[in-house]
Length: 247
Image 1 (cartoon, rainbow, N blue to C red):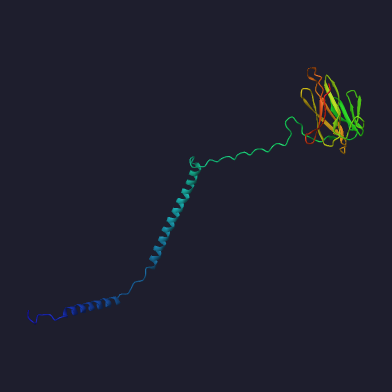
Image 2: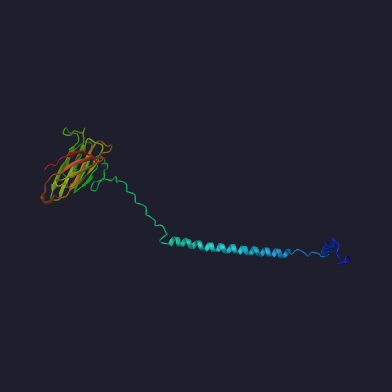
């Protein structure tokens, strides 16, 4: 190698740098000559609206699917015999204890109030009425009978009853007085077989503490002449006076 052909130290590097500077200068000059175009705003807006429509369509489709599936689930839950709970009917509560009298026992009631001398149809052609001094009866023939309340034979300071009766082929008619109580509510006749016949109580106004009673009875069975016991009850159903049967 001759001295004239040898390269000087650092000459290659300086040439490369110079070429790079020239290239950058050429690019910069070319760039300054380019005018940027307008922004595509209309296209951007169209794309945005298209995306919104696609999103709204997707949401509407999802809502429609939910609205369709939910009724199906509800119907299945109502008709599925396995999963549907069985309704248990309420247990009937026990009825309250009856406060009414037992069967066959007439309800207690105050005596019927009648005016002095007022005639009461007692049945079987008999008539009964009260006056201030006692009980009066009249039979089918018009024959009268009188039972005074003011007599030495009656202790009106304590509850009691009297009994008169007339019997025949058509049955009997029973009547009497009750006295010594203002709470009389029921009277009952009982024959020797235990058959009970209710009586009717009557009294004068003002609850004087006494009154009359009557009870028609059917004909005796098979000629039975057994007498009747008479029992007087108060408003609580408690016997307050009893007159034993007489043959």
